[in-house]
Length: 137
Image (cartoon, rainbow, N blue to C red):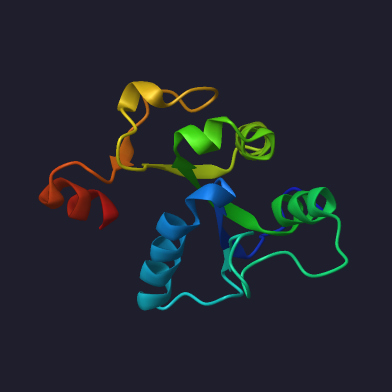
């Protein structure tokens, strides 16, 4: 694939499967603004996930190569305990994907680690409602 070739945009929600209740609500929000299953990749939700009989790592690599991904990192203690999630973060950083960090309730800004740090602007879901709505806008 030529570097200058324009790739179709897609949202990739990088998360721990243990945080599926929060992630499902984010997908509902994205659906509500008009995105569909072809525009969102979320490995834990049926219809947005990895097809059967597919190697997860090959599929993820293909997503990064085929699409212009905007990655949503869903920060939680579960996320940082997941080697796959941390690999996704590293891949997004190495491939210079655009990213948005979302901190689940109870995760402080100082809890952001790795190539995404506490100095990066993020959406903290348990902040003031007005601020969260402003950041989501």
